[in-house]
Length: 371
Image (cartoon, rainbow, N blue to C red; front, side, top):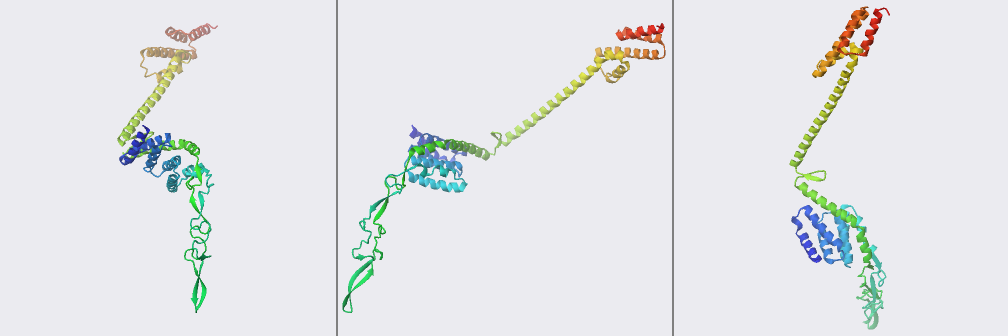
């Protein structure tokens, strides 16, 4: 079942040229999810590695290359890892970030090869000189070939440079070392053996960062598609220009309604305060019309001239009439007309009895009797 899914992902990756950025990102996520759950599976490794090539130059591509390299190590294909690491190195220079290069550097996962002891090579006796280090030409003597030639009737030794060793006297195949080197067949010429436990630990260490990059890649892909459609981002969502205009208009209407409601509340508050103040004045007239009649008269005439409540109008008339009588009584009293003052006060008392009125009438009567 897993192999089938991997094949489907591979086919999807191959044909994704016509997909949107978001769908491409989702396809990459699918290949990453399968690979993440089966990093040592060759099919998931290949499908994931193939999906990387469709990514744009960015950190997620660098991270994907790094994880692809780890996958190559899982498959014991260090040479594949080396090729991909070169791609990663070129990409790191392009994007200016080499973080992921160090993440997957092969040296950190290797244990020294016990066969070549880290040299990555094996030594064998040279097949050309059988380890003698000397030129394989039997006639060569330290780079020279000695021959007898008849000169002026006499035989003399003549030396010429050996063409095989070029007069060096050494074996050209091994350079005079007597041995030749071959890549170690155990570590494949790398000098170390991969420790897959170290690779697996490293794989786990970077998962949080890689998953975050994949999630961000999906968001960026979605954003690119929305921008291509001419949409505008507001908050966490994307809208068309028409939707933006409707939203702005709605917000404006809402703000206007809110402002009107606020003004209404403020107006009601002011009205309530004025009403409370007016009621306070009205309630004080009950006593002020007797104790401070001039003040009460002024308040009634100035502040309650527009009163519409019939009950209050009736009371205001009573308070005003009573205040006028008391004012006249006070004027008569000041003129020494005690009897007239008493008469006016009694009229005020008939309208509304009050202890102050009774006290004043009693006092005036006593004063009138000379007591």
